[in-house]
Amino acid sequence: MKKLFVIIQLFFFVSCSAPVKSESINEPEEKQLSEKQEYVYTLGEVLIKWTAFKHTAKAQVGGAFKSAVVKGFTESTNLNTAVSGVTFEIPVNSTSTNDTVRDYKIVNSFFRTMVNTDNITGKIISLDNNGTGLLTINMNNVEVQKSFTWEMDQATKEIYIKTAIDVLNWGAQSSLDALNEVCLEQHTGPDGKNILWPNVDITIIVDL
Image 1 (cartoon, rainbow, N blue to C red):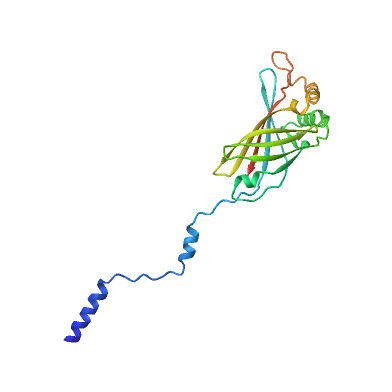
Image 2 (cartoon, one colour):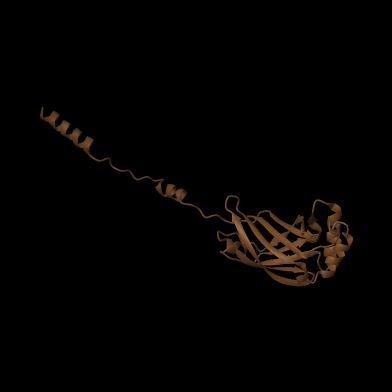
């Protein structure tokens, strides 16, 4: 009877005690997996789009460069580190407007009437956290520094760099006139005026 009483007491003590926590050998690994890893920016596809303007009303003429060589990109979790210092080289014969005749005229009557402009080259000087930055563009043996704005699509990790240029800053008046001459009919608007504007909007889309 005494033995039975002792067994009952022992059972009651065990059942009412707090369960002993066992150490999990997987806990450090689980903690590591739960931590948010920083995104590493890597260079993907690069697309350079441009919009020129003709007629008094500034009718848009859109196009793109089908290829670009980018050097100096650094894979990094910091966007500024990854992009700043990048150089680019754009073959002008990669011009594409979905019109082969117009492409030929732009390449040969505009770009190739410039000095040493088989390629447009440049460099991203800086990309700042406030959505602005600086770059240089080399064309017609002239280097011009331009500011730009940028924004990133956080879902796709595509960065959009936008700037606007005036080709006269590169001494390209004669090249603009040559292109306007071979496209006389296309550049004459409803008011009978023949105008090809020197202003061009540029958007660079980079998959990071």
